[in-house]
Length: 262
Image (cartoon, rainbow, N blue to C red; front, side):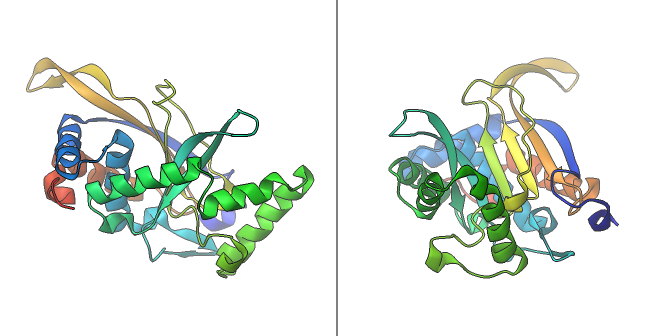
């Protein structure tokens, strides 16, 4: 019924917010950073938690294709990266694709994310090459071309990597850090041609008073703001997804494996 009720991903969007205590997760990241001698950012930590949630609740990373719902075979995340155009000096936005993110340790994922960011900012990688191609196209052509590419690569499920079009470049969920530029809250839109059913904006870690054992205590809190495609998932799916996130935030060693593991 949901598939028949809406025709595009800009119609059935549902938005929700969540605030999670993150002291334990941040401490886990610090231990991982010390063990792997790598920078483990809150974005990398949240990305690994999301990968675990998608692994346990694959419906949240499903894809709509030809009127039917299919589960993706790979847990892939798309993490937004802010760029500066070397030619114009203007700010731009791209991202790093993390395939098999659920199989990586936090240290390995942090290294992949850091390497992907440096690659993007250096103008390298498949996504960067695709962006460069679109730079030279007339603006009226871009919309129809994106729609056509989405139909060929997602609906027909054809591999166009030989044409420098990455296969499923956005995966089953996207993550953007709106806390980095100073925002507390953001409601991000779903982009139809990406076929991403779940898009999450994470705010900055803040100190807040919380009630613990009947007493008010200081806590570190991370706000998360999600937009999801109601054709593919509903509240029951999100409840399971959030339960996994809570478990990861509360005890990352048990949920994700030892922080020191590479």
